[in-house]
Length: 174
Image (cartoon, rainbow, N blue to C red; front, side):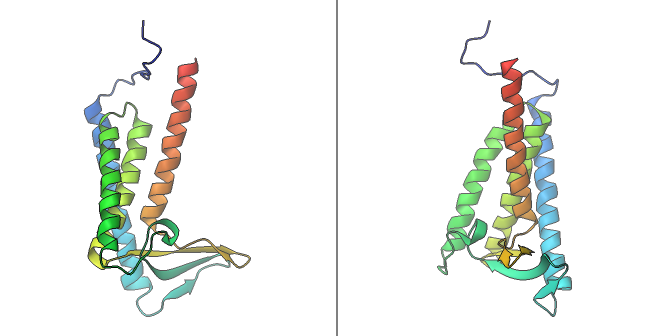
């Protein structure tokens, strides 16, 4: 009989190596898609103009984010990209250790997606000194801060981590 403190989820027949592979493949796919979309938008779509109105609520724009999400911690200091990159890599490293212990495909995929998004934005900071954002949604004069594929991946990954947590909690209650 397990002690009350042990919280092992039912095994799905896949070992830690498979979960690690799922997460790392997801991460690599996100990094590639992020960098390719940024390059395509920067070098082809926005080559001569800096804003394209796609619909009444969506534009493709050129925004260079010197901070993290929504421009938080933005600074013109030469150290900012390095500090933010170090922070993102530290978080990605913690998530990588968590990924090594993942016991289901959803959690492995979610962690890999978040790691890939973080690494995609770190690449921008190290190359450009800031992150290239280009997706601009707005309604009734209110704009959501511009974002990119990596930001989207991080958001989706976090939601999937929460979903996995709720699923695990329901399994434990049964």
